[in-house]
Length: 166
Image 1: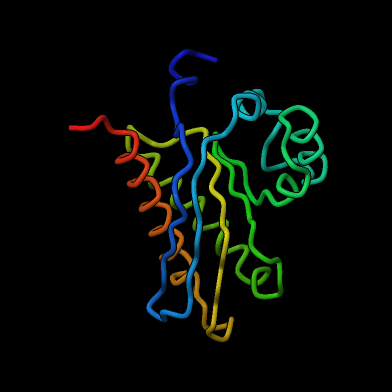
Image 2 (image 1 turned 60 degrees about the vertical axis):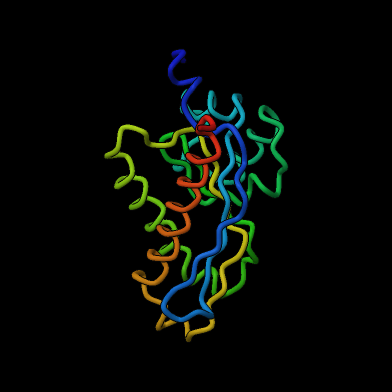
């Protein structure tokens, strides 16, 4: 691991961000926190990735990186030094929008990666997903819009928090 890789990323947790769709009753809440050095190393070595069995990954993270097993089992995606974790209730509605959430996360990462200051070594944690509309009406566009907005606000807030005072 290079010195540059060790210094990249977010170094403190930010407060929860909540975004809404055009229907104010639909919302997503999330926060971003830094990954610990052991988890970052496991990802860089390829020992933690999105293709492995979720249970095996959770046990590895519990044993080697001191993750809580329940939280490790809640990992939805691991991609290029970033982890998406779901701390919401895993009800039927969540299961119906899970693929939208994953796609929105990956789309945001690909879009954000085009910038030179792309955040690395972060854990994005969804804490609440509330959908009041009939689930068939909750489109990818609504879920992605809420997810992208929350992620952009969280990153912007982290940039402000980590900037030196004027």
